[in-house]
Length: 190
Image 1: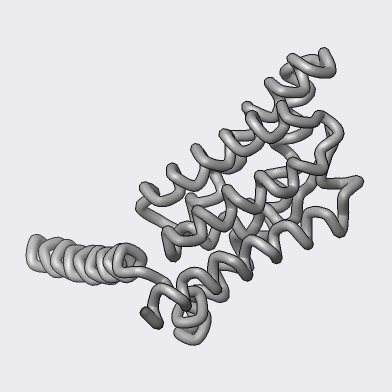
Image 2: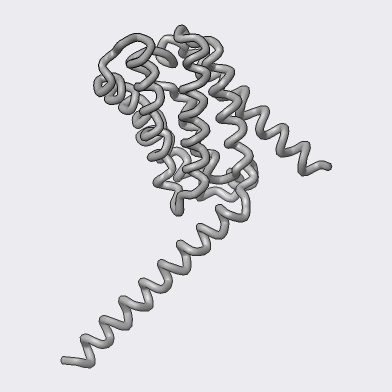
């Protein structure tokens, strides 16, 4: 019972944080040129799948305030759903910014259909904003935070995350042993 309550509280907190950050900078949240700094929270999905719910619900609530109306609820939320699912399948945390950046195609399509903005211009500007928020700002922050056990405990990093980290450690050890073996082999050959 306690674990379930903790999960629900985490989901609620991150959802509320996403909504608050997005609406606090509303002029930058919507529009052809947008940088949703709250989007960096999507990287939490790599650590724990429960945050996928936070991002989807948060995006839905933020898009209730969109000047584009119901269509933003549909396209924006669909893009978020696909992005967070894709993040869960990635093998490394430094790649987690890619799905949200690529899924801006849905928002660009929305701008093209509703406002008749040129698709490629919309895609370029919205993708750039997402890359700034998630790739340039969010990824380094989360890469640093993920080195702290306290952070991993606080966000409730799941078994999948720790299995990935264990695999990375094993791969590094293997490469080190292989490098030493090659160096020894070359030395013996001479």
